[in-house]
Image 1 (cartoon, rainbow, N blue to C red):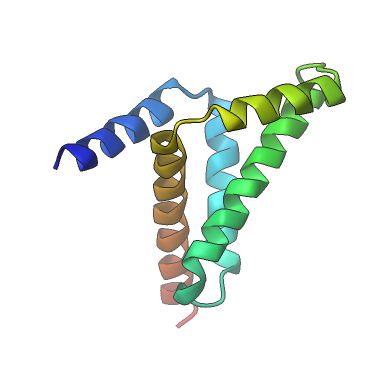
Image 2: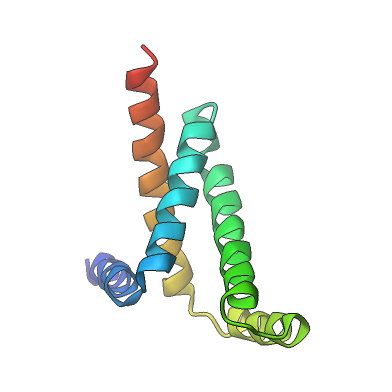
Length: 112
């Protein structure tokens, strides 16, 4: 059970320490992915694509709003990804999967 507690603590840390723009990007991408998903069997694929879209949106945000050099930031971002803890990646995946699933079921209920 400590593994579940670790995941929950990591999700809580992500949601409480992120800024509002990052949280808005997460919600918009996850809701959009959930509404575009065709069947619940593709939740894993949709979650991976949503995580990639979130990473790209964060990169574009850093380049446009942060005034970062694109190539230097891409290299730095790649190094940060290589040093990313698996628990953090799992927490992001679970968070995205839950929001995508809720959006999919909401769309399913609305379209009936």
